[in-house]
Length: 380
Ligand code: 3PG
Ligand code: MG
Image 1 (cartoon, rainbow, N blue to C red):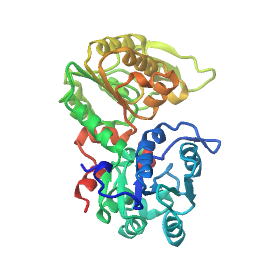
Image 2 (image 1 turned 90 degrees about the horizontal axis):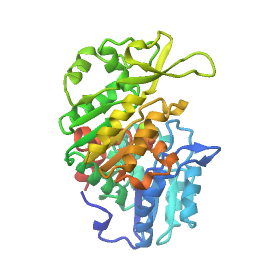
Image 3 (image 1 turned 60 degrees about the vertical axis):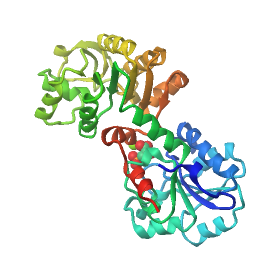
């Protein structure tokens, strides 16, 4: 993969940078600048080399959302950065014409344009027309076949940004781990996680399934799951995975009735979940067993919480985060709630690599590549 360091000339060259700008917003301000901090080296490198840097990206899912708060967060690091309220068209081109060497312009949310998510060639061509060179740093979105991911590289010579290159390098190394290798996959939605579970079972010595994902496995084992969130996964698919002795499922759980306040949670054995109760976190025996696996591992890969994190069931996820932070294993982690837990505990520097990708990380681990990587490799 070609990277920013391979771009022949940068001085006075307009460079379009696709960056991971999809940050959480609270009260119109960026509440965590985790992704931004990781892409700043790419933007600053291009600016220092004298390029005219045009930053684009997306925020949220609704086409009404604005990148303005993210622009203000960028401006805290790069005070001379400016904002364009449109991403394409005459006004955007005029803003680009005003740029001088080293300037940074942030374009409005690409998902305001349906051509972005539809990967329309017209939209990709319009966006590409703003620059002479394209740099891809939005690893978090590289699993999407959107115009700014796969379309623009068909029109411009394209290169990986510093973050993007590092993500591919680190996650590739996770596919050839040092043994004993431990993978932990949590969160929900079995259908989106099944391919990565299959892949990891062929590479890792232990694959722990946690979070709501584990409910389908426990149900297939014959336990009554009460009011727990289920994916409705195919039992024969689940049973196939369960037959693999590398797969680890919870041995006890935290349950609570979904109705009534305060929510009275309790530790439960797998065979005593009441019909009105839902599994909301991993239990103490499970957490302790996972900790033993962590202590014996040389490589640890982790994506997804072990409990319903956003409703306060944080114990399983936090105890896992702490255990990994104290281990000397190579640790590669990612996913929204996983990163939130690590940041809340203030232990981020104890992890070898924290991916900016959630779904993109899982997709890369499954396939060893992503549409965004292929687009760079095929680019003119
Ligand atoms: C993410 O937050 O997972 C990435 O930024 C991708 O966003 P998306 O799921 O809306 O495509
Ligand atoms: Mg996502």
